[in-house]
Length: 328
Image 1 (tube, rainbow, N blue to C red):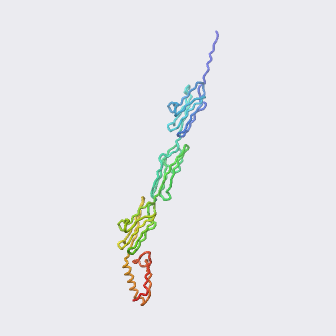
Image 2 (image 1 turned 45 degrees about the vertical axis):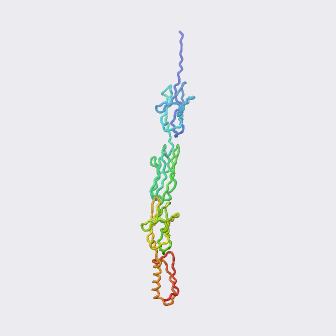
Image 3 (image 1 turned 120 degrees about the vertical axis):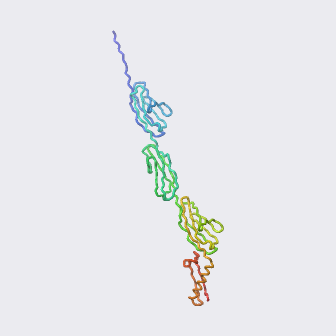
C-alpha cells in the first residue's frame, strides 16, 4: 500500500523582542509605553493597568502596527500612576508589565501673606509647597512647609520677599511684602518757654516713626482743640501748638501725645507767662538797691540775660535796660 505523510507547520509562539521599560512623566505631559512583539500571525495585544483592561479612548491611544505595540497616555495626571501590562492574547504567558511613575511639578499650594508688623517684633513668613521630591527651596523647610523667620525686626527688613521651589518637573514661586512699622517717638522735644502777656507762643516737636501720626495736646489733663485761643497742627514730621494772646492763666504744663497704628509716646513741657508789672517792679527794686553803691550823677547800663534772671525770662529775647544818667 502506498504510504502517505502529513506535514504540520509549527507556529512560532509570541515573544517580546523589545520589552517595556519603566517611565517617568510630568503632570499634564504625555507618556508612551512601547514594545515589539514577534511570533506567528495573526498577533494581537491588550493593555492592562493594574487589573483593568484599557480601551482606546481620548485618554489612552492604543496601536499595534508592524509588530510594534504602543500605549500613549494623554494629559498625564496622578491617577495614571500604576503598573501597566502588555499581554499577547495568543499566549498569556508571554507578557511583560512595567510601571509608570508620574512626577508632580513643584508648586506652592498656600502662598505667603503680606504682613505689616511692628519694629523689634518677631515675624514668620510661611507658605506650603507640594511636588515630587527632591524639592529645591531657597528658604528654611520643615516637611512641606517653607518658612522664613526673623526674630528681631528692623526697619531695614521691610522688603518684598520671594519663595522659590523647584524640582526636575517644574518650578513655582510666590512673593509677600513685609512692612515694618516704627512706633512714634520724639526726635526733638518742645522746650519749656516763658512769655509776656498778649504774646504768641509756639511749641514744636519733631516726630520719628511710621506716619500717619495723630497728635494731641493737653494742658494739665484738659485736651486742647483748635479755636480762637490756640491752633494745633502737624506738618510732615513736625507737630506744633500755637497759643494766641497768652496771659498768666495759660501758665502750666503742656503735654504732646503722638500715636500711630503701632504705638504712642508723649512728652511734657512748661509755659510760664510773667506779668509786665512784676518785671517793672523788679527793675525798680534793682535800681533802688544799686543807688546805695553808686555816687550821684552816675551813668549805669544793665545787661540782663534771661539765663541770669529766670524769673524775668522772656526767652529768647535779651533785654537791655538803659538807665542813662539817673539822678537821685
